Amino acid sequence: MNFSFFIAKRYFNTSKHKNFVHIISWVSLIAVAIGTAALIILLSVFNGFEDLILKMYNSFDPDIKITAFKGKVFNVDSIDISHNEIIEKAYVLEEKVLLKYNQKEFIATAKGVSNSYKNLTKFDDLLVNGRYIDSTKNTSTSVIGQGVAYYLSMGFGSILDHLKIFVPNRSAKTLLNPQTAFSQAAVIPVGIFSVQADLDRQYIITNLDFLQNLTDRKNLISAIEIKVKNLHKVNEIKDYLQERLGTDFEVKNRVQQQDFLYKILNTEKLAVFLILLLILIISTFNIIGSLTMLMIDKRNDILTYKSFGVTKNQIESIFFKKSMLTVLSGLLLGLFLGLGFSLLQYKFGFISMGSGSFMVESYPVSVKILDIFFVIITVVVIGLLASWYPVKILSKKIFDN
Image (cartoon, rainbow, N blue to C red; front, side, top):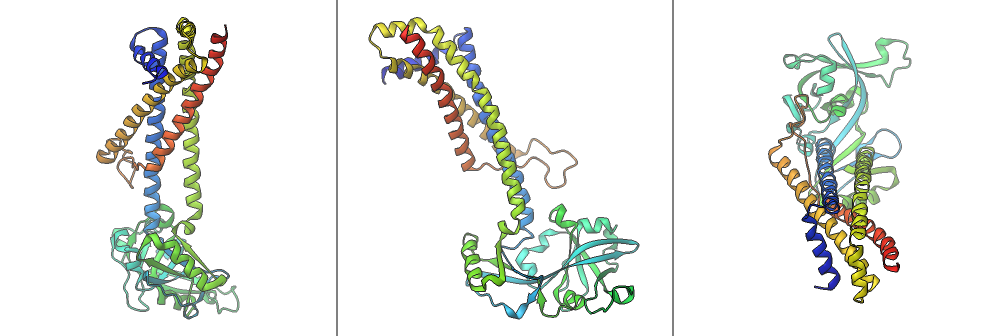
C-alpha cells in the first residue's frame, strides 16, 4: 500500500467522527448513493414501460413487412420471395372503410388477411372476446379492435350481430349518387381483440378474399408480412429481400415499421437520463465542498508532510484518492440500493400503478447491463472531475504558502 493511499484511507475511515467536516463527507457519500440509485431505478422503470409498449406492438407487427415503394397495392403474382429462414408469410390488404353498427358510424382500417396470418401473429393471444375469423374463402366474419367496438357500442352479447362495411366504389362513374358511389357488405363480428389503444381503435380484421372482392382489388395486396425462424438474422434476411426485390418495394423490420415510436422512446429515455444526470452533477457540489473543507481542516497535516519531504503531487494524490473513495463508496451503495429495489419490484411488484391501470398491475422494471455500465461510467467521470478541481486549486494555495 503506497503512502498516499494509506493516508487517504485513514482520512476516509476517520470520517466516522462526528465533526462538521466529516458529517459533510458522509452527506456527500449519501448524495452520490441516492443519485446513483435514482438513475438505476428510473432507467429500469422506463425500460420496463418501453419493453411493455414494444411487446404490444410486436404482437401485431410482423418480423419483416414488404410494401410497394410507389402506390398503395401491388399484384400478388408480381413478387416472389423465398428464403430458408422464412417460416411463415401472409398476404395483407388494408383499406379505409366506414363502419355502421345499428345507429353508430365509425371510420376504421379494414385489414384483409390470408389464412396464414393467424400463425404469423399468434392472434389467439390477442383475443379478449369471441374467436378468430373463419378461414374459408369469401367468409363474412371479422374480429374488431376493442377501441372500434367501444365507439360502435358493441357489447359482449352483440358481437354476432351484422356490421356493415362501406368502401368507395372504384368503378362508379360519379360520386353524387350514394347508391352507386359506395360498395357495401355485411360481416359478422365474431371476436374482439386488444393490442394497444392506438391499434385497437383503428383496425378490424377480416378475410383477404372478402375484402378484395368488396374493394374490387382481385389479386391485389398492400403488403406481405413475414415471420422468420431466427430473429437474430432479421436484418440479414431483410437486406437479402430488398436486394432481390429492387427499388420497387420497401422491406422493413419491426424497428423500421414503428420508426417514429422508437425515436420517441429513445428521445424520452435520453431526456430522463440528462435530467437525472443534472441532478447528480448538482449533488457533486457536496463532494467539492466537503473536499475543500477537509483540505482546509488538514492544513497543518499538509505542512507537516511538506516538512518531511512529501511532494506536492503526493499531497494532491492523498486528497484526490480520499475523495474518490467517497465517490466509489457512494456508487457501490447506490448500485446496491437501485438494483435491489428494481429486483424486488420485478419479483413482487409492491408498488402498484393503481386501480385505473388495465395493462399491468404494478410498475414494470427491466434492468439492462448497458444502462448499469453507463451509470457507473457517468458517476466515476463526474467524481473524477469533482475531486480533481478543488485538489489542484487548494493544494497550490496551501502548499506554496
